[in-house]
Image (cartoon, rainbow, N blue to C red; front, side, top):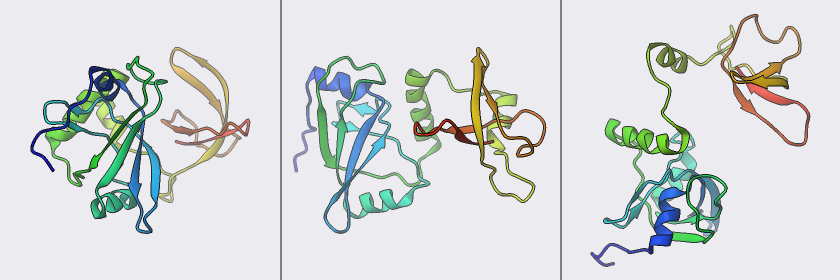
Length: 188
């Protein structure tokens, strides 16, 4: 190990700071490697020789494995999303530091970084209320129903669900689509 931070080219830096999707590979207990998609959001500190990515704390097995063996590889393999123009494949390898309890400041930094890719986040009294309450059925379980996309306009998609599966009224929804079927599932 050296006290000198690693250096990378300007071209690599454009990819590291401008790509939205990357793949992280981490070591399994059996000595293999698992590759999953993550979002780096341009989280770089070139002077310190650090790059970062976001991942859900809700999927702890990945993080437990990275904590057990912090050797990871982060592959910037596509320019389909984000702002990076170079077509170069960039592979960063190093030891990960996992923050299992990110500070409010760190979470704010990630939100600020995401604004560049997604635009400003929704906030305010109504948005804060809407985003804090997920919809559940009367039994307390999440509701998932099949839907069909029947149109769209400037306000969003128009979805049609089979009669009787949802109570009347509008719902916020998460959408999961599969290309092999005409229908998709949605959880309101």
